[in-house]
Length: 353
Image 1: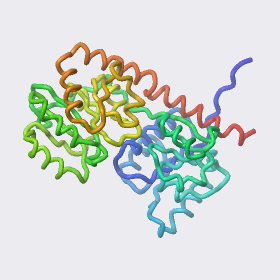
Image 2 (image 1 turned 45 degrees about the vertical axis):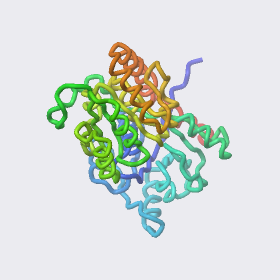
Image 3 (image 1 turned 30 degrees about the horizontal axis):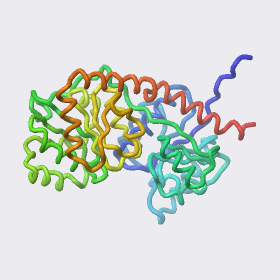
């Protein structure tokens, strides 16, 4: 018997998140990839000129809404009109605020979670999607049935052919060992741990690409531990691939990291990495095979792991090669888009029957 081709459902992706962030970037990538594959997709977003322009350049017509707080009485009816007009099979709410505004309708309501969110906001959902196996296990432990909880991964851009960023243009030393950290300057990201580790790595420079409320405290900490001249804050950047290509080692120092898109980006760029054992990196990384995992809240252990790789280029290259294989197999655009298309088609099959 000939296998029947997958009929892609009509999907409205609803994102009410911030201007920057890992979930927001994957939302953009997935919408564009699905549209380019010929799938019927409607992006509905919180007002953001940059995001809207990106989606429009890809050939889509995003709907922009306010997505305010509980006193926002206009978003919900406007969202309903947009959904009624598009007539999706599935309406996928990315994170809690989008789900708070989502009305019931003929579509299946799906919540997509990239963390351990307050499930009170997801009571009206028919299905939940987690982007790690750990999140899916947690959802089931909270009482959600197995048939209503699903794992669908993220993909990141392929940086194989990306040119390295110029260290000199970034204000970094042209030579020497360069470590890279990526992410919002927030206590969850643990950049304080990486800065403390730098006290034991006298030959290395640390560049941190990101913005956020912890910039001042982190700069002060770098001065306290006497590494300020070797810690550089680059601000928010949109060239993660070029930065990773310029670095000798990626350091994921997060103390809270449900997934860790940065780990997958490092694999994509063939950049060896060391990560703290937060939930996401611990699930992703095979310690000693495609990266190194160190204990939480331990700058000394982090420094030892970094020093070990910096001092053993052959081992670092082996880890980077294995990481690149993991990216190509599990987290590149093609396999992840196929998993999403198949997974979403399975959700609507009973409704279509």
